[in-house]
Length: 127
Image 1 (spheres, rainbow, N blue to C red):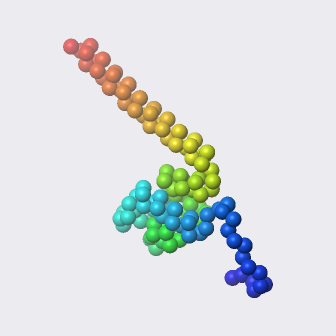
Image 2 (tube, rainbow, N blue to C red):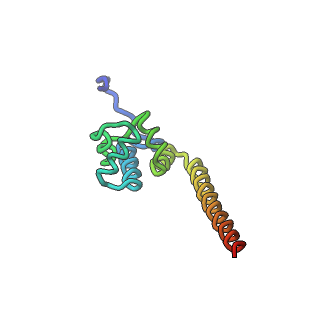
Image 3 (spheres, rainbow, N blue to C red):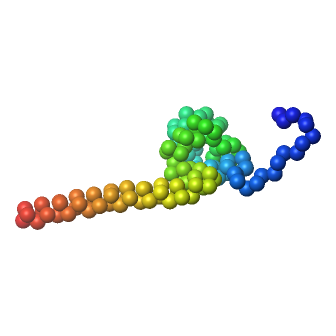
């Protein structure tokens, strides 16, 4: 509780999200990635070790995760990482994360193509 000093709280200057915006943004990210099912609640509980009620509060936007729970969500959820970086005003970091992800996906596709080509060459040599 705030002391009764007669002073007003300073207005938000736009440099950071309000609690409501933060909770709603994390909820939207989690629902986008996991959906609205009970399974989503179970996944969030598994990722963070939080209780069912806490996970439900995060998914509905009633509350936002704090501390270690936020770190766990960001570790497992790309959507939550993106929202966190946006809320922190670190869009440049978001570009780096997206590029790293695109590079890893491209490397995986190239590996699959290499395997297909190698199998095709073996089959052609066996004929």
